[in-house]
Image (cartoon, rainbow, N blue to C red):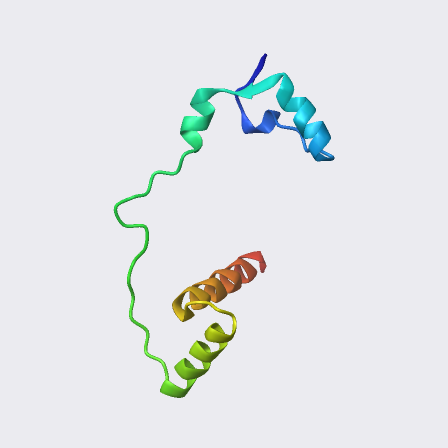
Length: 90
């Protein structure tokens, strides 16, 4: 059995059959697995206060409801997407 000690050692599998064949004679190093487990910090987010025009907030909530999302989660998603776009700009 060959031990995988780095995530870089994993190939890109063409299909599930090739992935299955790979794992027949390979296994992950337990240290690699334990290092990949995310341990939550005491506080992973910071609370902030934003002031919105009531009509704008109503529109945001309406959009979120139509997507079956919590409006705050949707707003965080929008901000994350915009941040990624901004980081790509020179």
